[in-house]
Length: 139
Ligand code: 5GP
Ligand code: ZN
View 1 (cartoon, protein in one colour):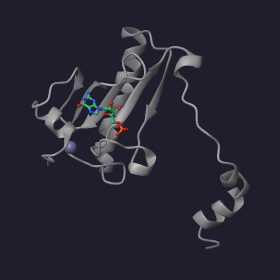
View 2 (cartoon, rainbow, N blue to C red):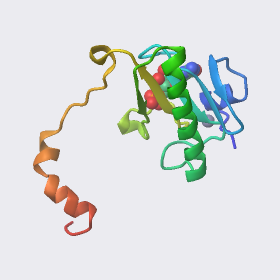
View 3 (cartoon, rainbow, N blue to C red):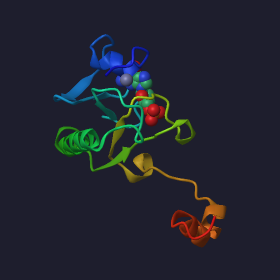
């Protein structure tokens, strides 16, 4: 299953070059062309799945297993001290390539590499209602 307009499918097929760092039967991993830290890697299922809503459980497990193997390996090969594993699924979340991928972002320095989020005050003030909505107790 491939998507002819998909850049990561083209990389999987070998039509577009990449800096490959890992490959098995189901998964390929290569360096991100716009790294946010040294060794920033994209771990990608070979089969085209668009996002977390689309990828089957067994393939997701294979991608995450490879991501962890790569993250562990970067502690010795690159001297990484820590790692962030990230996935954006959907445009509103910032996904820009619509072929599922996990970013493995090695971290070397807290001030330089920590990922920071903006807190949402209204989400905090509504937290109880949010739980009720999730649990189907209020509309
Ligand atoms: P997203 O924004 O979907 O979470 O991440 C997509 C990532 O793919 C970006 O970090 C971007 O730099 C990377 N990327 C986009 N096109 C290419 C490409 O052709 N080759 C490689 N290696 N990375 C790419
Ligand atoms: Zn694809």
